[in-house]
Image 1 (tube, rainbow, N blue to C red):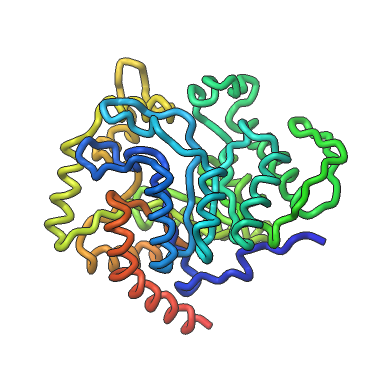
Image 2 (image 1 turned 30 degrees about the vertical axis):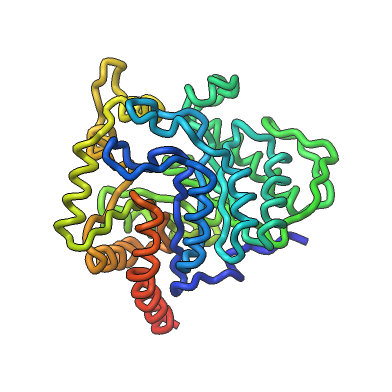
Length: 371
């Protein structure tokens, strides 16, 4: 008997909108600057953030999978915790918030990941989820002998399809035998099973990546040039999933800079930009493969990152942030946000106390009217 999809019986507190936190488990967080609050990527700090996220009513916490930093003056992301171990510990430290870890298909055998996530599911009482990454950072994986020159971009998604199929079957079948092109299992057993099938999400944005995500995942992380473009991408993903007889939740990543006033928040963001770590920026560009040449010529993505922010952002007072988030979710037809903060302890409490309640009321009211 297949394990039921977890998302159907865990409704969000916010009228169907999920608010999650991208944990600061890499030093420096998601702002490449010498002027940000210090994020040390320690377990102690991440534990404080996770417990606070639960207290403030967030729906999920997620950690990335990263194995090589960007360097620079700040040594950005040179210190990074391992996702499965971190989330297992945070599953024990929390009781309600959903726990999403990250695994790269190039690094982990699917049978190993099936058991890891089932273990987190057991620890958490059924709150586990998994972000699947197919791997595009050659230097990061080559340092461990894990890069596959024989697998191009689309080939990595072919590999991931077999990988995810193996994981899902191990979560629901007594024994699994597979003789795929990439994944081979021989009467493979995996106990315990998850209490419910863990939520699966991916950030595939290429045509092949979108196809993979719509066919095999429950959620997709999307980006867009602006609200209108993100809305086009989000609605297209939902329509394509429906044509496949499936549904998909759409999310985007967002950094929030919250100040006492709009002017104070803008001044804080400008201070971050003034402290841009050029060396780390170039390290990021090389890791993401977006340098046009090693002499430092940049494409549009790297030029944009000169703001010091690695993701889109909303900058302003509590009132401005709440209003703009509400507009973003509505305009882009999103199901949720993965949020990033400069100072997680301060900012998560501000967001949870002063912004999240209004968003809950807004989207719960909208959901009731739609019903």
